[in-house]
Length: 433
Image 1 (cartoon, rainbow, N blue to C red):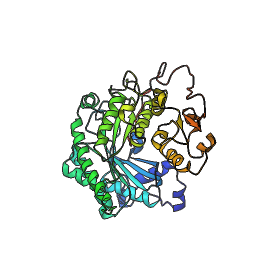
Image 2: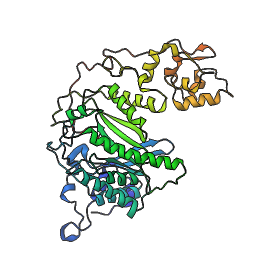
Image 3: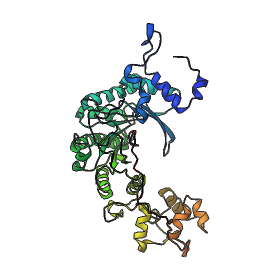
Image 4: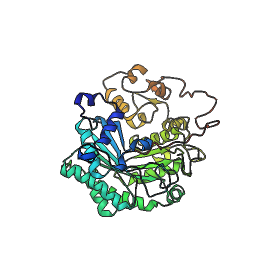
């Protein structure tokens, strides 16, 4: 492989960086006469797998830490399961690729050394026994934490069916553990993943959650954090495929609320279903991305705004209306709670106003004792989205806007897919979540 100077590396595109990282997975003396670096067969066609290629770099914004860049690695796109919706299903004819634990660690540490990423996210298909896959994931973590003393952020997607001792070891070494639940109930899961069992997945989730809660409790009681054994203290995440089953938003949020109540879970991921080519569900209509967005918004109301699951407004089918965000839908359904007086309302009242988030609500409460708010411009300086909040507020008894909320007119509503062309995709957007 030709020598690459640091200056050339700095000017690389993302595609060139990913190509270089895959090349670095090869042993130094695999080529002809033991001189050239040549990729093993399982890695020579990584570009042929399209969006399921092993590497992905994504920048995230984390509160209190600014921008965090994660190298997200799909250890393998090979899988023994035959889930009807999944692009990696066993019977789908596609190129398969695989990174061994040592190769994965080598790739990540080189990317980290070059400043391309600050943390690692690992996900994987499940080729063969889940216990073997868990062993490989643990091997990655043990190399990073033990041999190379990497003390940064590592997020691992746990596979269902691992042994209790494996779950304990994985959780001890990971900053965050995630579980792909796919569906909120077992009967629904069987429809899209007939070889999987939701109880098996939930058993692993509960085992990891107990360990995460114990670590979090011990830290609150004064135990110093050990960056090489973080114990999953960042909290767990879980993922659902939205629209692949008939489950309603009410059912999904009910399951999410149930799991939040047990503690240890930081947040949920929702992935709108996409019909994948060459799968049994390729003719099933895709789920509007707006539905995924509404679920995220409702989830945020449950976690950050003090809303209860019974306060989310659903239509007759148990789904949230797509025309407005869930907070606005709730506000319009409760006219008796509005308008809210900016100068006297409690934080709990302000945070329920559309266009006012927890941060802006806190700033209003903190500053109104020493500041006289004279109009909407003053509130905008505190982070209030004036166009959304004005119709729900009064200032000194005077309404800031007569119209509470205006919806754009269109030929079709947000729920209406009339005339929509049916697309099929090569991969789901949730592969690397």
